[in-house]
Length: 440
Image (tube, rainbow, N blue to C red):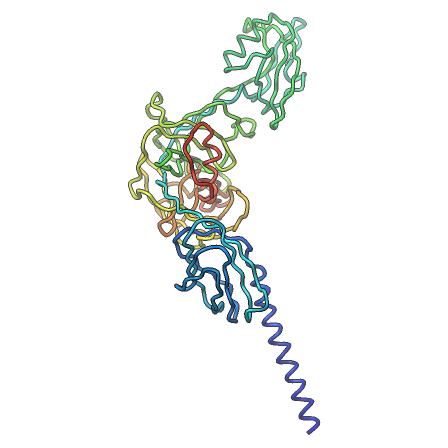
């Protein structure tokens, strides 16, 4: 009898330990669940905690439905072993409190309820022209001096590739020709250059040298004041005429450094040919500008998440009118589609798969990994090629992202930025407009 009681006691302890272990493993899942969420006003949000116990849920400020039951300043008991339906009925911040047995605190969740934003998805090929704030140093040149030796005064003075020359003798530089004119007028006298490097501004003094071959005084620098290329427009908000494109920053082709712009514009473009992508050899869309004198929009900012500005004409999409912008929590691994142009100016739909979603708290242009699954697109382009950057990604009828990078070792795969970041940041980068974009 004594032996049986000991076995019973031991069995009870083992069962208790097993139950405790199970409870703690599920409890850890609850603890690891995000403490802050976003939700769209009036839209269902599914909460999955996979906690095998009934839990009391309370909101002390806000109006919402839980599994269809109205919750406002009271507790509702729900079974967290199954998905819980939440529908937030008002914008603002709502605090949820979860307790087990109505006593033991489990989790506090802050929900930011935002209005649904709808935009017109892009896919259009665009020509991009950026004018830098000054001129960008892209190389050095040698000037034969009076002693027949080679000199580059700019290089000797410490000017680096990628530096932007903003002023000469306190006069703002308007372009390459303007700079050449100012330098030549010095007749060899020392000049003061205002240099911008990595957002820092400082001055450098340089003495030009006379170039007999050119018949001009020069600094021995190659400079550029404009960058141009072809990319893809991501979205257009007809309410305030704001657009976003590319999904990543534009860098100088020679120095690889971001271009700080003074002004820029986008125009229509057509795709004349495709250079097919291969392993370790990225492909490229060969585009041509159409009606260069007809500007369709300005460029207000060149950012890590693309270029932003205002369109001066309406934008239409052949497949969609207005569609919602998906927030990050709505993006799922699985099938999606990409809109882009591979011939002339015709936007087409192509099948892709979202392989991995990185649930970021802060903006980054590598929010998900995608894979081209459309055989026709792979046959014609090899996958993702240069010029596809900004191609919108649609999943379940929502704009969820834009293509940004290709994997060099596998052109069928690449990175994409979340549409939430691009649309939300549009307000900040709409500097010259009184229009308003809701900030996600």
